[in-house]
Image 1 (cartoon, rainbow, N blue to C red):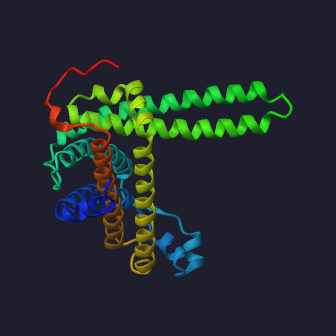
Image 2 (cartoon, rainbow, N blue to C red; image 1 turned 45 degrees about the vertical axis):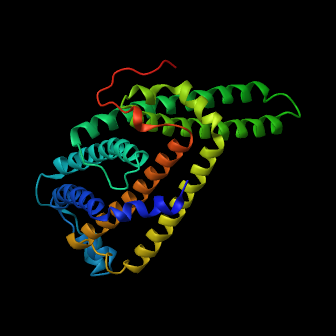
Image 3 (cartoon, one colour; image 1 turned 30 degrees about the horizontal axis):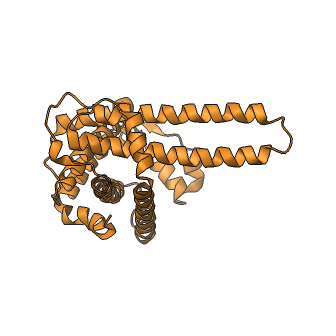
Length: 289
């Protein structure tokens, strides 16, 4: 896996990344505007920034409209739709990178939403499997809790099993997403046992992927901290300009990291033998588990 290629991938596609950021920012800003317009927030702002603290502390927020509910609902809807869309669009991103294309694919909003929903259902299945393993571990720990001298050994064994299981299930989910991208069939993401076997067989590549993903998290986390520190004074108010700038920075950094990670996942899938030349749009069949 090539770390530098994955890191530079979203920056080579920066205009498209920023167009996505702009669309999300406008949607969020509209919903925040509806919520913010519900009350006169000046007493709260005065109290937070030390302007006439005594008066502000005793003042009550004055209602200005009845837009709180649609604003809050709008925020929830935008968050849900954008999350599903990004997840589904990631399938196309992985597929294009596996095909050697270093440009972000064309947005197909409806299909991306459906793909994102399919991945959400698959993710829930993988999550339930991990929860089931945890329940089994807790049951075994409860049964051995009264056995002297074995508590520490059992706890260490349970910790190791939990880490290994979480890693395998996480890699299996990513393999399922890559197979979904390669084969064009969402059922590939739900073939949990098959994907876990692939994850176990290629655990070294999975460990490398995990280390690179952690490196991205650390790198972008440092960048976020530096930007927040540098712009803290400028974005400290509650004005629409500062709120909008904060949203833009948040979405920009998250999308840059996300697309870099998808590039890594595509490289990981290619390294373990998943090929995208079997992609058939609308395919309805997959091999059995």
